[in-house]
Image: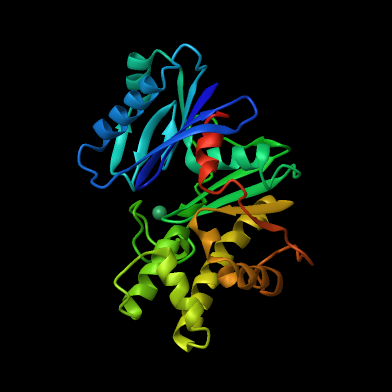
Amino acid sequence: MKIGIDIGGSHIGIGLINNNGSIVLKIEKFIKDKTNIKEQIEEFITETVIEMGLTNEIESIGIAIPGTVTDNKIIKAVNLGIEEYDLASNLEKILKIPVKLKNDAKCAALAEQRYGELANYENSIFLCIGTGVGGAVIHDGKLLEPDGVPGFEFSHTIIQKDGELCNCGKRGCFETYASLKRFKQKVSDRFDLNTLSGKVIRKFIEENPDNQMIKEMIKEYVDYLSIGISNIINIFEPDAICIGGSFSEYGNIFFEPLKEALLQGNLLFNKRNEIIIKYAKLKNDAGIIGAALI
Ligand SMILES: [Zn+2]
């Protein structure tokens, strides 16, 4: 038995995983207030694991982190407001179980490669599009990771000179234009919706199929998204791309336009007749399942 934990921007999910990679028990907590966030994370994890009463049977704990992990330490998780944090050592001291950390998009990529939509491809790209844009590359069946630093920060590649300010401090990052949060914020502001709820915004879009302003906003979003994704395709020439995160909840609203922009736009260096893009199969559980695979 292993434990996989997914720490997101607004919630923590803890799963007990059997040898087939299935979640046999899942306990979640929502983070309403980010004050004392480190204490909240440590307390919830230690209490939950101890309450499971299986500490002698658990081989390891893997944790998916929404940020940069180096040498098993959190260097920076901007959406949580955390920097330089040795979460693994703190948990190991109390639980006496080995704890390993990895970036959440990389965990989700591992899970999709083992049990999900990327299982049949040797060379693939995983993208997690939601609050931010995370990514990972599978090459010859293995997750690519440079020594020392995590790498593959697609989200912080610049696609607009002197563009909008990103959370990372740079300007014009892919994430600043292609995160769903930005799209939702723009739609919400333009139509006074007063919400960032994905469900409400999707419904609003679906109920107004002929609204010219919405059409333009979708086009602008897909234009930026396809520029960022085409840059990744031009470098890695993957056999398949898998997209996870709340992006998949938008069904065909972006999916078909994105495919069309990639295939018919002037973005790909090596033209393709077909491009395999899949929605992640493991959905919200990918982080937990992948963390247990670290
Ligand atoms: Zn950035």
